[in-house]
Length: 482
Image (cartoon, rainbow, N blue to C red):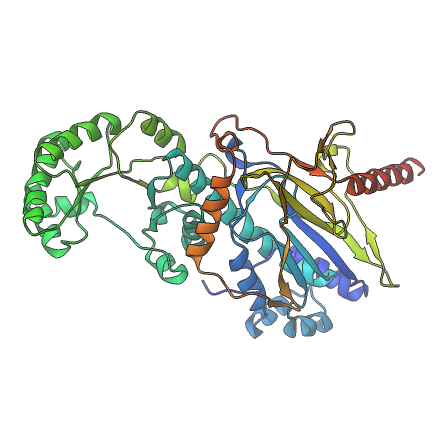
């Protein structure tokens, strides 16, 4: 489906028209963040940023879009004329795509007019939430497989063609080695891979004939699916015959298991392959896998070389979405100054952090992250000072990061779009993946456990804590005075 500016929630357009007709269009700052880690895990892999920037840069209403909106008899002609000429002119700062991130910290900061930010809200959350969810799932699979090789085979199980593309991109960033989605491979420059289906084997007179035909056509990429009839009977025996024929030609091959007890079968097959002199033959496993199954098999020391994962990867499996949100943090007044804003709610965990902010990551002398500190934008961090880290939701919980405990700091939010134009070229997806995996490797293993991971600390600076407390008190006083 072609990209359209109508790919947004209808109420974004009606609110936008309201701002237009009310002449209410100040500069504002909005933060995108998420509230809790998916999969009961310890982190998220931030993904989708470069897709988002590309979409924003080319965002425009076609004449067909305008004609459709006019047909609804909801929109003023003056507003439709404004939409005809609309281009995003705002400024965006974000953490680098592939960064390991945590709940509550700003991942994207948008500075734009009220109408501009309103129009891109749905696109931003749609792009970032899903790709980050899948990238995180892929990262968990990568960890569970002991940093092993796995391929994304989820095209037919994903949520439509558009969802399949985004899932393939997110899966690769999170650690996948290849995709079966040919279009995604082309669009994003991801390695493409595939084996064979049971229907290939069933379409020939015999299993051996099917294997031989495939090996003849694809001698450099032969992976034989051996469980169509009898895995340990005909399947592996016929695969060994073809494997030895390929070996005589100087070619290697692999077999794929798609059913049964993968621990038992993979051991039996490895023994048979080795006894036949096919020590280099690779074993691939699929069959509705997820990170928990793979972790169990890895702990069982199975001789499986690569994994093929579909449904649980491209859909998120146990988690349908990432709970990313987009909240107002500041608006510019008529005199050019900024007024910090925050959402005040009876649920304290949903109160937002006000103002224009930065996120600083503190590292030890080995380059491992220690904690993240959310500060106001103009705060500076020095290696020669102590810093108090305040719990974002508690009035009494805090700790002090002593100088000498941390050896370096890094501001995570960086300028990536100014005046509606990207400030840096689109990086190759391989470099995004490498950055993500390097970042993941720098964290202590306790943060990466599949079950009951250690909680990485994201805290507020003293200045931000004071501002948040003051605004909360003032807001509650106004409410109580009514």
